[in-house]
Length: 267
Image (cartoon, rainbow, N blue to C red; front, side):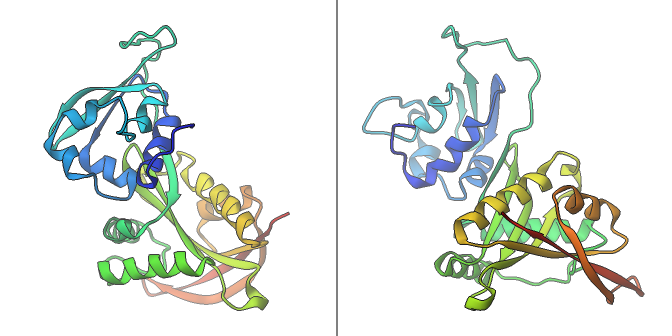
């Protein structure tokens, strides 16, 4: 992209760049989830904000550079974007089936509230997370501070997976400040049930490796409940190897369960 966008609109640009659907309808909330920040007041007050196509405004490049234009705006409700085909037709019908649009980005401090909600949903749905339903208590302020601190320290981050404008998964990458352990980072992965079997976990793990390459991290590690077959298959397919067993490390439904240590060494 030759136009220098404001940083806040880059995730929105990435979202449209990965899309091929002829029509994309997003609520204002979904757009803000994609961005990780709030839209400006003008976006809520004036339909004309969405219709701008000339300087000094630049935000419209987030969708126009990917071949989309705004066809409808319902203030404070939703925005409809339509793709212009190669012939310049604004009503392209060449692609009839809508496909999922997945965006993976680093969490910002504006994601604190939605991240807490996402973790609550995942922990309520999953049998194998460290925390059970409603066990974890976090404040928006504390999570926001954690995100800011991690960004400043540089050795840890949180990746968020956004599917069709909805946060559906996360991957916490927890590195180390100590120089002797700075080459390694541990992972905590969570995906909502309705978003399973869409390749999201695999995409998050790949993104983690890209992040690791920029930080000099050469070892990624995690633990998985031994009887969590889908989880173990996921990591096995991603190239993680078993290093040992932590026996009776979790008590779930009054039953002692083992965890498996897994690691991957990056080239």
